[in-house]
Image (tube, rainbow, N blue to C red; front, side, top):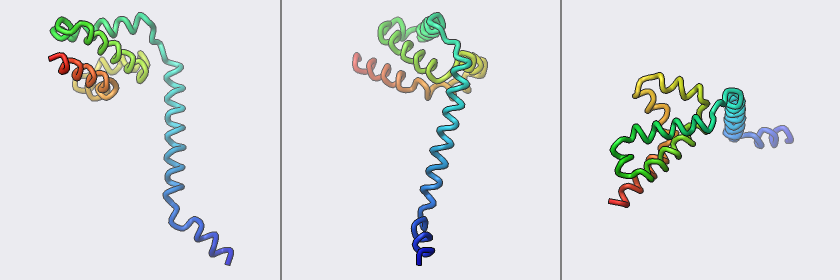
Length: 124
């Protein structure tokens, strides 16, 4: 009778094991990723200023029309990029095609872009 009770206890609960494996795998992945980033993190205040300045410069007409909003957007994007990538990873990404850069970077600062667009729409 006890053997039957033991079988019933785990019967239909394979999803729990799969869930534990997925959560553990994610924890290991992020732990290794964080370790790599902490060893290679070379961002400085100067790096932040350069990224923000280049972003504002590249915004061209938008930076002229909406200087404060553009600067806010660029600072937000810089913060998100620096939180997601090491400086060396970012440099490698910028060496690739524009399409590849968009694919890898856009999701990182999408919230900044959406906020920027919404604030501009509210002004018009």
